[in-house]
Length: 161
Image (tube, rainbow, N blue to C red):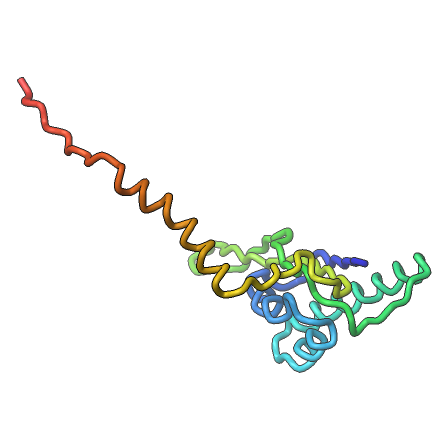
């Protein structure tokens, strides 16, 4: 089960928010919640809201599908901050000029998913002797190919007229 939440138009620059979002990407939801709760960055409060919303969306999806739900089993699978619309303002500057002020906004997207079984199981362990024999078989064609390759000659420069 996967759920997502998006908050658009957050009044903080994406560059500052990415510092916080990088801390929680890939973590379990309870761990990410603790990281955001105790972070001193202003962006952590907005990202925490989005994370709580994503967990609530997952809970609603589980309830709709009549499936069991465990918030502690969720993991932050996708978390990005993109740039939003930039608000352009002007302020007075020297000699009657105006200076542009850029008030940047950002969009936060977080996806959470339940921890599932590994997609590709690890290959079965081979006995040591069989593994060495297989490695030697792979190495033989490469060694032969190197021996058979003809030597390259450097191109000669032609005299200009």
